[in-house]
Image (tube, rainbow, N blue to C red):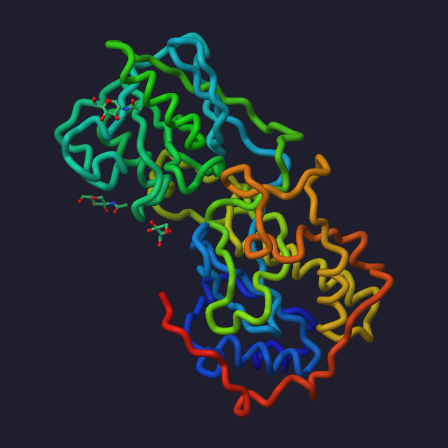
Length: 371
Ligand SMILES: *[C@@H]1O[C@H](CO)[C@@H](O)[C@H](O)[C@H]1NC(C)=O
Ligand SMILES: *[C@@H]1O[C@H](CO)[C@@H](O)[C@H](O)[C@H]1NC(C)=O
Ligand SMILES: *[C@@H]1O[C@H](CO)[C@@H](O)[C@H](O)[C@H]1NC(C)=O
């Protein structure tokens, strides 16, 4: 961070891969680096973390950092699940293969096995089960990558996968570059799909790919993985600060990672990725936009402009919702969703002189045990 400041940068955009520390600010290298940057007039925005939805799961929460959660955008890449009983459930997948819309496949829930943990479709967990030619329902989570679950289903002979949210993730689904036909569905859909599997002796399903779906609602909504406040180290200052687009963000994709590096992946040059490391650069970009229009503004004035002009409502004019489709609280959204047009011309900006940032050695930060 010191090197970037020395190079004369105006904005530092800090991804989660740089770290997320739960130690007190005076021992947190990012907090120390950031206070030095702010003193030199460099704006610092940082990812809040992907450990939601529980309270006090955020990182990078020093008062001089912009702490950024993640919200959805109003479009996605659709993969609809159709059940043999006629019910339809909208889900997501970046991988959009050409499949016949006429064929239904046998549908099974990996968790129907009596072996615990099989429901998460971890690597090797489906050995010994016959999933040949079937669509397999796998539960989200347990530390297993969503694409990796698909690799396991494919290895076990499956022709498709449904990733089923559990209750904490609610309606928050994600588009991934799966390696087999797949759809990620909400908890509500998952409950209905499992109920259907139980209700009939020969459950069947198909996955129909919908391409880009525009104008989805509610949007923006806070996604389940977005880390929440309050800050454990400094609960007196509201954190996070302000949300931006962080779900299904389209970008150039030069990398091959994980099982998607298998030979059949010929390497598309675009992908969508989700995380607070995706929302943070949006806020950094807005800060750079303001800095280009108002070169003499301090990091504090830029941040004030961004936060006081944030939208507290979504595109439909309703309160911003969370993963359960309940109104999201300030510990999820911060000031609201960034509005770049308004932020450039806020009318009023609160400033602070870096000299008035309290001396780090003199401040007694409240120390609480980290989780
Ligand atoms: C989140 O909070 C719930 C309810 O307090 C708890 O059961 C769950 O274990 C927590 N999850 C994590 C990942 O800590
Ligand atoms: C899955 O297990 C196989 C065999 O044990 C191993 O070769 C492979 O690297 C594992 N894949 C992942 C994603 O862990
Ligand atoms: C399906 O049946 C199993 C076993 O009988 C049961 O444990 C499970 O709760 C049922 N699931 C649903 C969604 O009805």
